[in-house]
Structure formats: C-alpha cells, structure tokens
Image (cartoon, rainbow, N blue to C red):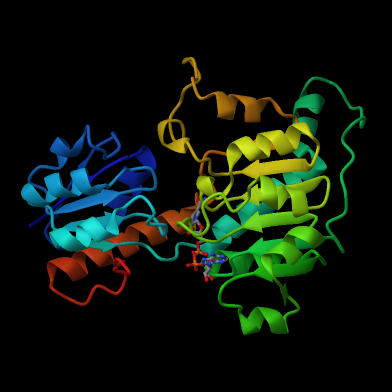
Length: 333
Ligand code: NAD
C-alpha cells in the first residue's frame, strides 16, 4: 500500500485524483493546508508527499519528511523552484514532476491576458451590464504586425509563438537554446536586449532560477519601448514588482498582465475577500487601470487537470514498482 499525503488540496484536485485513481493499492489523504515548516507534521508516516506550486519544500521540511518515512516528493506542476533539490539529493528523497500538462492551456491564457488588456473586454462587460454602451476609453490596438517578444521557447513558449504567428504578429524570441523549427516558421531569435528594444509585447515563458530572477527590472525597462505590454504566466519573481510599479507610474510600462506574482504564496488560490490584505505591492498593482491579474490559473483547463493527475499517478506507480523515474528532477550539482 502506497500512502500519499496530498497538500494544498482543492475540490478539483480531489475530484480528478479520485476519478483517475489506479487499481493498485493507493491511499490518499487530502490536506487543504500548504506544506511548509509549520505543517510538515501532517506528512508523518506518508511514503509520498504530493505538492503544488506554493508549497515550500526547503531543507528543514525535507529533513522532517526524511525522518518520518517520506521517500518521494511528487510535484503536481512543471516548475520545481520551490524544492531544495540539493537537500533532497543529500537526504536521498526523490523528486518527480509533471513536465508538461497542456502547454496550450498556459499559452492560450497568455494570449487571453493580452487580448483582455488590449481590447478591454473586462471593462466593456461591466459597462454594458450597467447600461453604459459608450466606447470612450476602450480603444485598443491591432496585434497584426506588432512585435511580440517571447522569452523562453520551450513547450509553453513554443505554443505561444505559434498562436502569435497566427495573429500575424512579428515574433522575436530569446532562449539559451533556439528552436530551429520555430525559426523555420518565422520566429526571429535575438539577444535579450534587442528583444527588449523592439517588442511591443513581451511574454515570459522561461523557468525561475538564479539567472532569471528579476530579469524584468529597472535596467530592462530603460531599454524597452514606451508603453510596452508585459505578460507573465511563468513565475512571479521573473519580474521585479517594485520596478514594475515605478515603470507603470512613469507610463513606461503601458500594460501588465500577470498570472503569477512574487509574493503569491499567501494570497493565490484562497478567498481573501473578507480580509484586510496586508501585501501593499499587490494592492498597488490592483489599483492600476492597465494591470490585469489572474491568480495562477493559466494551467487550469480540464485537459491539463487530467494530464497532471494521470502523470502524477504514473510517477508514483513507477516509484512504488522500482521502475525508472522518467520525470525525475535532480540537483545539477
Ligand atoms: P520548458 O522547460 O519546456 O521551457 C523553458 C524554456 O526556457 C527552455 O527552452 C529553456 O531553454 C528556456 N530557458 C531557460 N533558462 C533561460 C534563460 N535564462 N533565458 C531564456 N530562456 C531560458 O518549460 P515550459 O513547460 O515551457 O514552462 C515554462 C515555465 O512556465 C515553467 O518554468 C513554469 O514556471 C511556468 N508554468 C506556469 C504555469 C501557470 O499556470 N501559470 C503552468 C505551467 C508552467
């Protein structure tokens, strides 16, 4: 019997994990709380700990898990910046992830943010409901023939480039490993500075690591076009939020669409509508008319939830049966 403690559990996690439960001997306990130093005791005695983007799996948490029977961390996401891989390696705990769960879901959400910010459909919806049929201040711009800069052209970035090409945009890209297939389709790879200089819209699709943290900072804004649109559906800390707020105040940053936020752990995925929100930065961002925030929902489609669930079960079954872990993530050191 494999015992799984599933953290940060929501109704949809339980629905999909129960629906796709394999025949093999598996017992799952669903915990609504996130996994962090305050909640590790809940995982006592579970072979597998199943976590999501805002669980904090640092050295202290991993040491507790190791001492209380956990042998596998199964991430229900692609990004693994919230796991101390070095500590996991030292402690002999394996880490697996879901490398791809509908890249189109995230790419399509990035385009949804662009279209909403640009054509202001969220404002039009509210206006019309109140009997206001005026077009004043709803002017947008054509995406056709604009330059869209894509940073990171892996699975999601590639799907996003293809959507942008479909709109007739000029697509520039920056990646450590350019994709020749995208180049054949007309994507132009350049230096990151050239991409910053030429793009009307910049969309982030690279992972968060020590090289990419705050890649969108005050120096980057200096190079960009006035009124640039930035879209972040990757990880919050790619953008220096304080620098973005300054750029918004100076009208340098014309539009900001974010599905991720650097201090999202204590906010996203929860209803705070009856609370006093103490995070001053997010409240300032919310106050701008040209900022659109969604709370890490880019992945959230039926197709992606099914993929996350089935791949997580495959990862856990492979581990339980001693098979090769094809979706293992390891420390590079
Ligand atoms: P991927 O690994 O397929 O692609 C990442 C790409 O980024 C690769 O091509 C890689 O070469 C490139 N890259 C790495 N370092 C770079 C750097 N310093 N500069 C430029 N490019 C760099 O990953 P993916 O599946 O496309 O996912 C991308 C990111 O999207 C993930 O890291 C994750 O953080 C995020 N994500 C968000 C959601 C959401 O719901 N908002 C869902 C899934 C993934």
